[in-house]
Image 1 (spheres, helix red, strand yellow):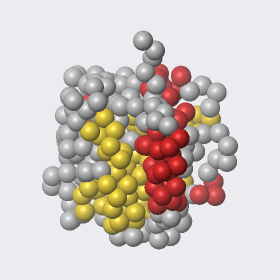
Image 2 (cartoon, rainbow, N blue to C red; image 1 turned 45 degrees about the vertical axis):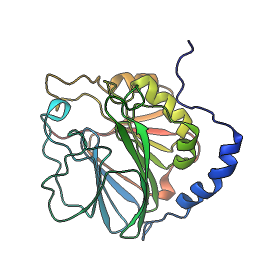
Image 3 (cartoon, rainbow, N blue to C red; image 1 turned 30 degrees about the vertical axis):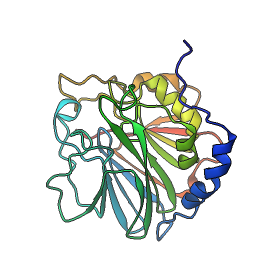
Length: 257
């Protein structure tokens, strides 16, 4: 049997039928002020995105398993996106304030930000074990963001059309039973072709003994030849004018324990 590929080509008819309309939705999706975006890593797949006058929190977690030793990521935000309601990415209880919380796929507009939630299996069994993962795409501060959550299933043609070629992708790379392995992450990146790549969902000192993930080094090793920088910070600021014009770059953030 041939090795599973991360793109399933369903045919040109589907592309012509739905591609133009769905992709144009995202080309018109702009946050209020394109002044750049600050991305702060809060551990595992949790990030706080600040820009365009908004704060978007993705995948707050409860402290157990692979997130056992991280600090609580329950910070103030205008909008919270959860890739599922599993506790390592859907710890939405007791969040400060009263943010709007999204956890189902669909098209939304919240506070002037257009958001698309796209389903991908959360395991290699078509979602039969862990259900569906929601990948989130939106534009904030002039940057098109794609956060793949804990995707483990293949990026098929319909999803590729919706994803387009984002400026920034946050992609799981640590493997385990419900997210991409380093090899699968590399294949997905080749399909999505983002400008900036931030790896997520890998083993760190924040993991408990039961964590089944590998560290980020294996993914980094697979991507040799690309522009890779391991930053000495948990945050990065990206402006549209500074985005690479040709080859993708990888930025590995450092969690401050």
